[in-house]
Length: 295
Image (cartoon, rainbow, N blue to C red; front, top):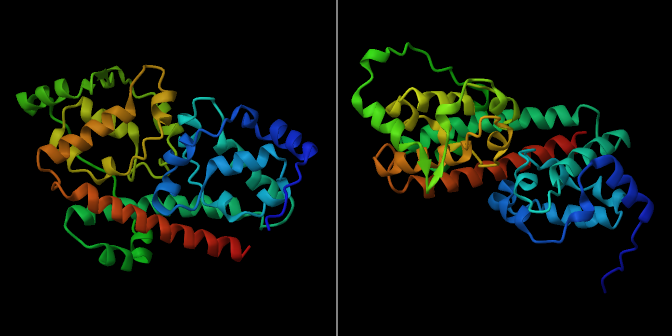
């Protein structure tokens, strides 16, 4: 027989006041659940459940849940929520509270962030290997190798007079996506997108500004062959942060579609890439469990 839940009003007020997550606005629409990349890949993180438990004041239970450490801190749940609830802010608060209560070691937050940085580096190598036709098993077998191998920054000079007419056509084609303007030509390299992007631990791995500038320069082949364009999780952080109205998520989706349409990756690549991403996410959660267990 299920055990009745006893709401804790005092804890609910504490969570609401200190998490700044607007938990009282949630009406359980599940957009955060369907948008969470960890839930999509592994089914092990339900932001709505955490918000519901917070509204019941179940702070003691929340700070002991391993799920609060699975979050990528991508803010996608917060950016998608029609009621402006911020599950990501709630999770940050719960992590800090777990450390404060000494349920985990003080360095656990930093160790989890380091795992996230390694995750994106591994995904970059996985994207490159998948484009080369390598199997899931081959890529996963080299997990420890890929995490140690830094991605070299792109280098080289851009000689504008050598840019072909096709580059101008490419830039023109990138100006809108599905009827919406991308505004990528408005970029003046202020780094707002890079500073807010949750994936931008290493700029050589993923940097939205680099993607926007490569597109703006008309370097079609270089950007469409880049493994970086497949790392984006479409959290909309860059789009929301940009004071120039650049729709970064639309632009990157457009680049992915064009890479498929023009044969820079094969038509089966998206399916294989999704399988790879899911496998990498599951392994990431195992690594997180090990960090929590050793704390």
